[in-house]
Structures are given as structure tokens and as C-alpha cells.
Length: 304
Image (cartoon, rainbow, N blue to C red; front, side):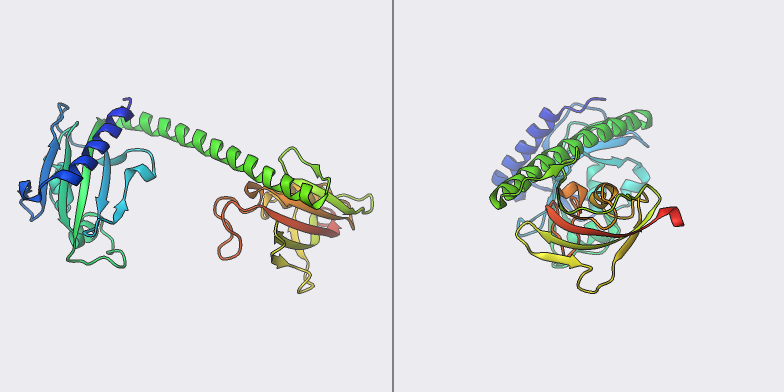
């Protein structure tokens, strides 16, 4: 089943418009104490047991603070419909039982009920358990189990392609930052195909490490502005790792493999070959270019 994203956006805009102009006294009272209003009547089928419901869902705290939006993930929220479960899983599920494909609605539910009963987890810090949550829901589609598996596979491919595009864009941005920095410093580097730039500060002996060899290095890590974040020189305790075991950042794997015993290199590393989108908590921010001065001290040839 193909998802009509134009329709999804239309429903979202309709709900936003409704939110700014509706009269709350138009709401009906649900059986479990919540309030609801059907904003748009669709012409799709009613929910079928064990099918998967595709919807957008935004919810706001009583001071209009946005708590969640389907826009953050850029894909519909998916929930498996089991009527006996939905009937007894809190106000929001009970309310959505009234909907069918194509419907849009707004619900006002108790904060404690939404988190503790429907979501089965604790109430987030700062929210009043007796407060009210406004939930905007638009039902976009319904899939049986086979259709849902195909849809999941399609979404996986879409996310993979998007992630690859974002990585490529970040790499280009990082390389531009590195090149500007090097030009300002009057440094002419060499480079790997990956985009890592490097400068040979001191040549070493002929001996080079191979995959599986254990290497010992001294290093200093710092930002482009010179801010240091880690160094083995401070403690005089070299770092040791097995080349090719992928237990260190990719830049170390690629860079050290090109060095010879006793050599000293400086590597200018795009973020995806360092600490990527996660960064290093409290030390390196996500998507940050880093620089490493590395000295290859020892090579233990495959454990011998």
C-alpha cells in the first residue's frame, strides 16, 4: 500500500487550523472521561483486528508545549489494532476505537492515563499527573500483516537512503571546514579516498603494520581550534590496539595502517570517521571534525 503523503500533510494542516479556531465546548464526552471531536470524516474502512494502523499523532501539554510529533520521524506512527486491547488500554486508545481510515480527530486525555495506562511508563519530569494532554490524530491507512512487512522494508530502504545522503552532506561540509583551516594555516596535506587529510611530520622506518598486528601509539586529540580533549602524552601511557579489529575509530584504523614504525603523522578527520552523529559524551560534540597527532611506537607482528 502506498502512503499518500500529500493527504497526510493536508490532514496535519487541517488539524493545526482547527486547533487555532475550535471551540472546546463542541467536544463530546468519552466513556472513560476523555473528550473528543471528529474533525474530518473519512471514507475508508473500519479497523480490522490484527491489522496495522498508520497514523500521524501530535500531542501537546496543557500549556501548548509540543511533547511529540510524527514530523520528527517523518514517517507515520504504526500501531497494531487489537480491539480487546485498545478497549482497555487507556483513554486515547478507547477514543481511537471510534475512528476509521481517513478520519481525523482531537482528544483531550488525562496526563497520568496517557503515560501510565496507555504508554505503560512513568510520567516525564515536569508534567502534572493531573494535567491534560491534547492529542491530534489522523488515520492515514491500514495494512494487513503481509502489507505491513512490505511497507516496513520500503521504509527501511527510504531511511537508509536518507541516512546515506545526510552522511554525504556532512562529509562534504567537514571536508570544506578542514580545507579552509589548512589553507589558513598554510598547510598542504595529503589525503585518503575517504576524505581524511594528513601531514607526515616525521618519517619512520620501513616496517609497517598489517591487519592483525598489535600496535602501540602515542596520540593527542584536539579540535580545529586547538582545544585538546585527550592525550596519552599527559600520562605517558601509550594506547594499544589490534589493527583491523575495529575497536577504535575508523580514522585510526586507516591512518595507522599507512604509517611506518617511529613515524609521526597528523590526521584531520571528518566527523563520520571519528565520533559521528553521537559524538563522545561530554568531550566531543556530534558531527565534529577532530585532529589527531599520532606517533607509531611499536608493532607486534600478529602477536609474535
